[in-house]
Length: 287
Image (tube, rainbow, N blue to C red; front, side, top):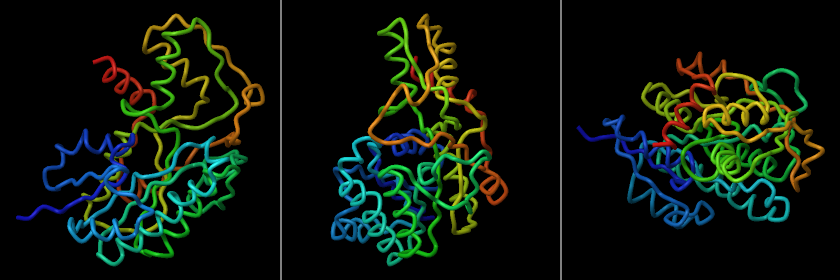
């Protein structure tokens, strides 16, 4: 029997590498990985060539411009990848009858909520990165009505650069660190997100629309840093600070919690607690 092919774009990033790490668990599928160097979303001709040669049944778009602060000065580039690139991919997948799953972000919201964001809540980004991702969602649906969009938040993993790896490095280098304590959310272990996407694909049930996925729990970046300190037995002193004391070029949402009920109910997705997944990640990093 011929295996269904899954094309992973942005294979060099955290989520793309997490799919590569779990691919052997899904022997019914053939994974085709394309990094930014192999496949640029802002090149429609290149996209068409890859789709025609691979002929994937599914495409998971992990490709994105994710330099949040840099995006403030590189607006055109952020929109080129996160908006126009997504439009190109959506068009291509619609033409090829490929089922598209596009990864988006909590940054499409302004962070002023006091309850976890539902998929139906109005988007209102407060930085360029968020604007470009919000535009990408609109263009994805406009060019492929059958798309599934998954918004996620605070992604960490063993791969690439992320909060967990940065904290471990800084805790080894310094005796004291200041970490923001007034931004609230829930981290997402990239391996858990990849497994959730595979649950959707494996269900053989395609329900287009927007879904939210992040790990269980509600914490601040400061709480996250304290947990990393505990799991790594670090002696570093962590001090909580306000966002105002740590100015960045791009504004950050103060509240990023996502309501994950829809993805649970629609696809019976199991969502681990962030602390459990952090322990798994740190153990893998240590090994």
